[in-house]
Every structure is written in structure tokens, then in C-alpha cells.
Length: 318
Image (cartoon, rainbow, N blue to C red; front, side, top):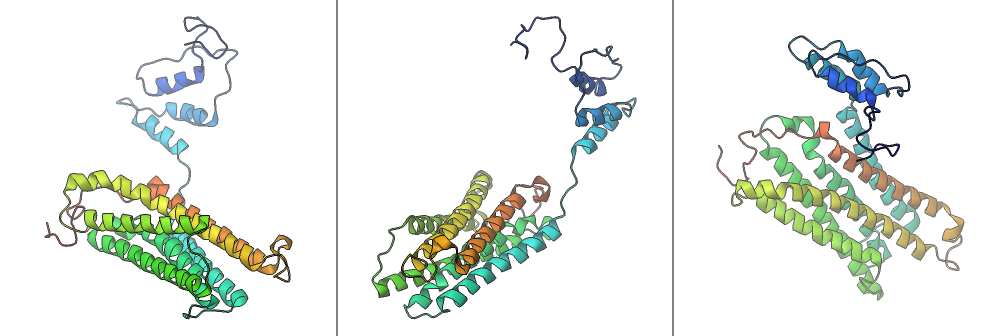
């Protein structure tokens, strides 16, 4: 392999990054530093912090130097509970926004096949497939779940997910009944395909998770194999739910603010369009923050093999 300036690997010009020799010296007892090169680049800030910690290496090893490097590299951690409180407020804000949109601009709610029955569709979908689903996904990030039995938290996780699924099914009933009563075709738009596909995938996810983690029939090796798949599809379903809700908001605005039928068309950005666009942004922000919390390593439950880690709902106590 050639160096960055195109010379061959056998050149006597020395290592490409001389500052990396500090790393080797910090962890090699008895080593001495070579004389500095006149043309060497200035070390990055993290390497400077490492150089400062180099003198802390103890006589019996390099633990002090390693600790110094670690402290220099770690950024201040974001506290989870304030973040969780903000996320909960944001979720409630999403539900309040979508409810106000349907109440103020579209006449409120009913269960009679009219347009007011359709208004249940966005409210139930945002509440179930975004807010409650996000809350279910974050159950295992709560610090109390890191201690004691895991089974109650499994129950809470599955119950929140099941409640979200029930609300999503009711939302489907509302929109299908409205379409059938008004003679509107079903399942012709990208939003409808994406939304129905998301709910079908969610149903499979819930059944598979309940069977693997709460029933006593799946062996431990199968649960261990399925767990990362369950986590992956959990995040995927949340992203699909966000896309479904945002596309549905946009579709509803196009229908209700058509040129010639609305006093102010969509392209002129009337107050309803501004309000609904903000709702879409809030939904995206909520979902992105949930995904951030799921991906943050320091907020994950430790994978200690406690006595009830693999305890199913109907299994015997260990």
C-alpha cells in the first residue's frame, strides 16, 4: 500500500501519522518517544488529551492512561428522565394537534359513516401507531426496568403495543366505513397501501413477539435469535407509521383545500395548511427522538442474564 503522497510503502519517510506513536507509547511500558519531526502536523484535540494523560500511566500497567483517554473521548451524557418528559409532552402535543385539526376545521367527531366519522381516522392513527407505539418501544429504556423482575415490563410493553394496534384497527374501520358510505374507492392511494402494509406488519410483529417472549414454548436459543429481528422491525414499523401519517396529512390537505372548492387553496398556505404542516413536523420530531433514544447505548437495559430474563408469561418461576 502506498502512502498518502503516492510514495511506496517501503519509503524511509517514517509513519504517515506520527502523532499515533503517542498512542503506542501510552500503552507500551518502558518505551521512549522518538525526536519530534519538524514537519509533523499538530495533533488533534483528542490526541492532545491523550498526550496529557500519558504521564499518568502507572508502573504496573496503563490503566491510568486508558482512563484518561476514555474521559477525554466521552461527551457529557444526556439525562434520560428529562428527555423522556419532553418526549411525553411532545407526544401529547401530537394528539392535541390532530384532535384540534379535526375538530376546528372538519366539524368534530361522530360514528355514523359521515365525514365526521372519517375524522377519527387521523386521531386514532396518530395516537396509536405513533405515540403509543413509541411509548411501548421505550419501555425498556426506563431506569426502573433495569432492576428486578423483567416480566412486568414485558407485560407493559405488550399491552401498550396491543392498545396501539386496537386503536389502529378502529382507525381503519372509521375510514373504510366512511368510504363505503360515500361511495369513495378504497385502497387506491400510496398512503392507503403504506398504512395498511404498516398495520399488517405490526400485527405480525406483535404475534411473533408475544409467542417468542411471553409464551413458554419458544426455546432460549430461538428467543436469542429472534430478539435483534424484533428490535429491527420495531424501529422499522415506527418509521413506516411516521411516513403513513405524514402522507395522510398531505393527502387530506390536497382533498380539502382544492382549487375552486376552498376559499383559500393549499398553494396559498391558509391557516389550516400551516397548522397541519406543523402537525406533520411534530410527528416526525417525535418519531426521530424515539429512534434516537432506542439507538443510544447508555440508555439500553443491561443484558445481564438475570433469573427472569427468559421467564415467559405462562412459565414457571425459576
